[in-house]
Image (tube, one colour):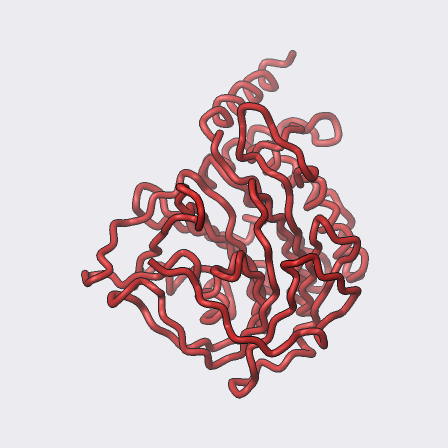
Length: 350
């Protein structure tokens, strides 16, 4: 075996063995001709993680749900958001084409926080993605705001478990810009570059990039790592998102991005011995940031559902609405008219 190939395999294996306890999700960004930009992701989790789609208009007053020492804001932009258990937002796209994706990162370490007071106000991790969707039209705006560190993200236990929520956040926008936000060793690390089109889980993003650099020396049509582990999925997604057809044909582009996400998904019911949290894919999303259409596919549903944001009312006077998906409801095709006015769910605080 070529020594370079052997070195790559040894390095990847060593890093993977230090990343055993992860919930495997994959996120990719596709850039095609004529300003076509689409972001796709999978939600993989060890337990059922029911989702609903929520229409949030502009003008919603929110706070960070961290007690007296919390940030407050009013949403500047409307969004369609995918909830988790109706206590958090883990994915979504706003009316300007900004997409937010939260993925598991067991390496996350958040700063200390005092809910009664202190130098920094808090934002519950359940609101991290929604905060970005509410406040920013572009990745650059979000990066500049997060750099100021006006608040810290505060985590808590997943309901019914002894596991803390440990996630990182990716943002992409309609220009094709990208940023990854991670709390490592209690400090916010921001990776900002349009080329950062793939994100998975552990190890940290910086190490994922290093692994992928080594794999670039091996042609993807000759050999690709094939396990469900995060670093392997990162390499496969990086290869396939650049190998699929470059087109502004929406139907082909959406299908192509879904195919990459499915290729990096975990088959339903699969578990990996020794890696108990390499988990079944529960749902997938593709967000078309040029056409402002949000596609959702449940692993247990025969249909892809999509929502054209241009058909939704985001005015401040509009009602919060929900497209219920959490009990196996079946819809077909464009479903913006299926949203029903609903009382907003309460984000989980601390």
